[in-house]
Amino acid sequence: MRIIRFIARNKVMSFFILILVFGFGYYFWLHRHPRTDNAFVVANIRPVSSLVDGHITDIYVVNNQKVEKGDKLFTVYRKPYELTVESLKNQLLSEQYQSKALKEKIKRSKLQVNESKAKYLNAVYLADQADTLYKTHAVSQKHAEQLDRAKDEAKAELDMAMSNLTINEQLFNRSIAICNDLTAQLDSAKVDLALTTTYAQSDGLISNMFVSKGIYANKGMPLFSFIDTEHWWVQANLKETEIGNVRPGQKVKIRLWLYPLHLITGVVDNIGWSVNRQMTAPENALPLVKKENEWFLLPQRFPVQIKIIDHDNAKYPLHVGASATVTIETGASEFVELFWQFGLW
Figure 1 (cartoon, rainbow, N blue to C red):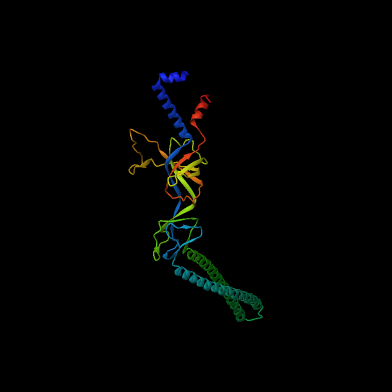
Figure 2: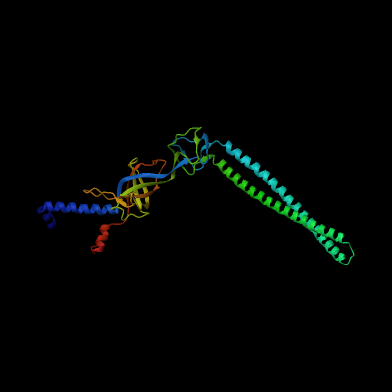
């Protein structure tokens, strides 16, 4: 009764108190349930380009078509890459024959070395014997000198045989290296041949495709976009006054402007750590602080990535860039914490 009498006697004051209570309540409610319509649907979008050079001979998809992982998208002219593979196969085969021939030469060179070594040892023995017999006048000086020259000739023949063996071994090693290099080139050429056909790397949508047969595709040149439909997010740009209690994993209620009566569930995936608010002066590399409005200082917004976890995309197809309204359930209330601090709760 006293409260009613007080309100009746002080209507203006009661009105302002009521407005103040509702204002504080709404403020703390916003901190518990941050809400914004500055949000939109995002997805992983990657440019699709040919991984090899060539003009396009076949196109298997059309603009805005849904595709599944592994579906063919387009093919560039294969013939040059097939010829490269065939040429490298022939070069590799030729060098492998060369390696086999050098291997046989090595065997023959080793036999020649063994034969020359035996001749040299025999010549050394005969020369030593002749030298001993010459000292006892058992043989003539001329005979001893002939055997000594024969020993030198056998030594030269042995050195020549060993040199030929070394050369053949080096040539064989070089041939093996060439074979390895040609094998690597052949493998690379086979990869290029396989890359003449581009496939979808995941389920998705073809977007912004205006490509026809015959167009020349440079390696890495974007031809159209591919929207990965396996994962969807909503980017909500929340004010810095609202993200103090936002944490990854918190549940989010999402309503798309496309489907205002359909509720979508999501979770906070991550919170942006930075936004660009300063520039660097080129003259002295000192930071330049952007001048703010002197009448109203608006709070900065930070992007919050929200992952969509419960949505029927077949019934309610999502569109990249579609506007959304999100409400985050933080599970925290600064109003309750304030009461705890002052012992009022």
